[in-house]
Image (cartoon, rainbow, N blue to C red; front, top):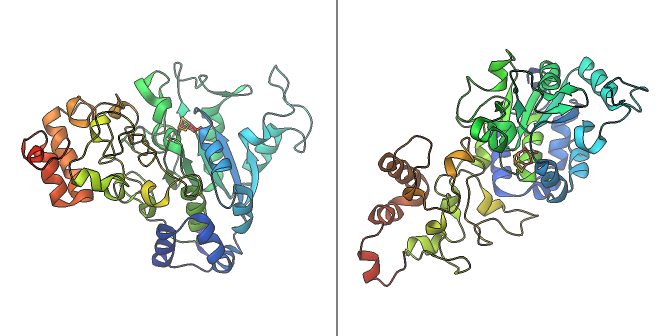
Length: 372
Ligand code: FSX
């Protein structure tokens, strides 16, 4: 990211305050002159590669953002030079041989851009290594995605791993059938991520979520281009968006604090008993919300499945089982798991909620007429 640091900068404090408080639209429009001035000299291109995922990351960015993605990219003066899905595979014969020139052939276009270097690289989807190290579980034309990623990474001034698959392996890594990893992590392990696996050495920022919120990407891009150092947590996520538990600001938090917990869907109270993992998931969904601020999972009645976490989905399944009633959290036993949950709740919920969590099934809440 060194060459991005030469232009005028917004202070980190200013960025974090603005980004944490508002959506991309408010941020980009209210800060547009400052952002534009800060990134005036960057003139960056954006390359967007897609590996193993469901395509929901692109769909989320395309459909749920305000401003819509192309306007936003324009505002921050970032040229979308290549996108695996939007461009499709053009000009490639079925035998894999290329035809045409870079104006008509996406493979040649990508080769040229990679050769020029200096781009911001967004990677969507995990990077499968299987079967048997070939990477052929995920192909783009005749080339394994793993090879496309290895070719493109060195020329990137910054890599953004978009979505939980690209960040940690996600659903594509689940049960380890494809030997897939995220860009810099595999689950919680940096040692097993693609960067370490293939001997690469780029700056990587993780923007997880299955799918990710458009604001998280657009504001991270604005931050990167402004030259600020993006402050990240232990799992490479910008603290501005992933710094507090969903539980902390959940719209149903009042019901949790009063021990009003639903045992069936659509009852309108806390979703903890229905398997909500909001105490373990760190993201600002409750304050930022989705689809231009319309709603978010727990608000609309869906238990949080912790889709932004490195161990998603394996550690959080079954999704609709209460946290402490199953051997979730990988190999952590239920007792230890309960302490971790309580620890997470200390961060997010305050001591009263922790007491209630610890009280669990005690009769004390019944005396108050509360529902567990
Ligand atoms: Fe993964 Fe993206 Fe989840 Fe899907 O492509 S983060 S499966 S929403 O969309 O990679």
